[in-house]
Image (cartoon, rainbow, N blue to C red; front, top):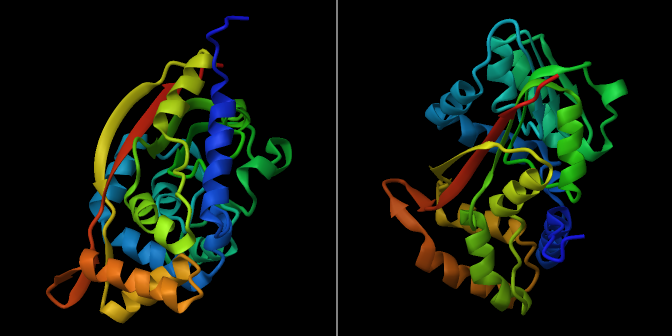
Length: 279
């Protein structure tokens, strides 16, 4: 074995597990079990139609194609894609997100969308999915401990394009945790694995994706200060007056009052990696 060999899947696992341990506030799916929170997520996404349109255009669906959306959230992309394609299968483990997606599809009169209410790791392709999909994608939903296994499963059901959207550097929300964790929890916050690990893993699998970086805003908007404070308090699972005081001081320095609302500005660098699967 090459002494310089790096197991990038193991690097991903270690970063993933360290992130979960340092966060200590549940995995990605459990955070969105609340239907009200999922509704809020969809509402914020719909406020940025240009970004949704950009993602849809990048995937390039047509009326004949079948699409697999891995980690579909509240249907931000799955529902618009279903309106433009032959069929969409959306995999989403969070009850709140899946319920909101079903409501959103019904509201838009979409009937060619199947929702698989499982983690991608637990999906059985033979039981839960169609035989193959022209487009398989995951949009910022790669919170999976064994990323190699997850990608291999995507490849097993892909007959055309695979497209992965992920983060290139520290995200706006991770920056807030990085700032606050030492004071709130007396420990450093560990960010999750990024696109460098993902690209190297793909390369080690003899997959050579196209790569395109991009910036997107990830602002948080609140109608008033109290709403912002309670949102962060709940999000970070704060339980003591000391923690509340730390958060209060941080928000007073960070929130920007803009017209009739408060804004927590943020910019995140993303990466799109895509390649064609040959059968």
